[in-house]
Length: 541
Image: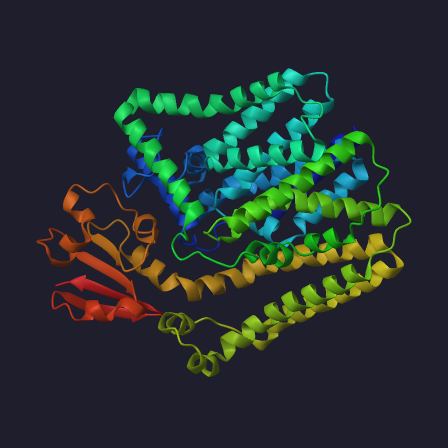
């Protein structure tokens, strides 16, 4: 009963953190709008087996997360809140799962530290308020790894093997075969470190494979049954080609250096990432199952980090699977620092103060940038960024206080840790949770106003109208979701050149960025109707 009460409190507090205010800001292009648009078109077309974008087959992602968004939209309507609700709900489930797993692996105290640290870390918390696939995808992979761990020590080996495979299959059905790649690489590293299977049997691994294949084969089989083998083989070919291209080339200018994800995790997973520096080579006194699970977490962490450092396409959430092992390993150190005769290393104190101070200064600087943008604009050699900065966003110097209070909170918490680590760390985590909420609720809408709101407002002004809307020179899904586009009756409307020069049968609007606008200004058939915050809007005469 005692554990049930603790679990219930965690679930309720997680719901309070993640569920409110999900729709207070527009969906961000691309990923958030991409998946929400897939769900919207799935509802309109009533084709629930395959994803579509602009009412054409979309082969980049499998449909499980989109199904979750469909159910959410059925409940809350087609809007921002519904698009983000599945991940917010997944946040509640994740924190409850961390408590359950941590209690079983180590003990209840460590489990509570894990829950608190996960909720108090920037990117893990932030992503539960988003509408992207990764939080759900990562959760299924983590559950699969956990079941593989249980398989090593439990008497019910067949059950854990099948569950490990099932969760891996659900991960594949959420985002694709990268889940299998991570699992194979991780198990290969595990075998190298342990010089063999080390307690696992080939028959058990066979059950894992069968469990992983089941969800994917069932879905793909039903797709072929309804849409035919030709579509199925085409989809599979396009899907695999896309995954290979992501690995080998920079997709959509999302490149970066090899250390990109190292930096992202160090800064974005503050403060959890800092406590990885607390580890030492001294052997700990954990029991064998705990050491085994910790080894799996280290393997997951390094496999994901190195894999996506090698991948040419660099996007922040590609390394988000690291959040589970990173926060576990960090929480392990919090538990030991608060319950064992250990002292926090000086390097940890220095990094907490240094990186925390940098983040606080960045938050304090946001209002300063907004209030003094006229002085910055001459220094920027990017017309689109200059246009973005011209957005009318209200700022005040008083908003700098959030960064100042954050800075004070970090320094006070670290100083408290020197006398009473437990109380100091709790103070830091509370400071983190408060400032993350303020950032999401107060600062994110202002940032969105600079980056895309002019275009979103234009699209919304055409919502429900019988018109064509096309973006020129850049990729976007916003014109589909925010105009509430229906399936076109004229196939020519997919042809950009026809929309620009052909005999269009509806009013036709175009949006481009200012950096590409000159070539369209010269076209006599286009009438300039507005130019705002880096975006230029045209209409066919």
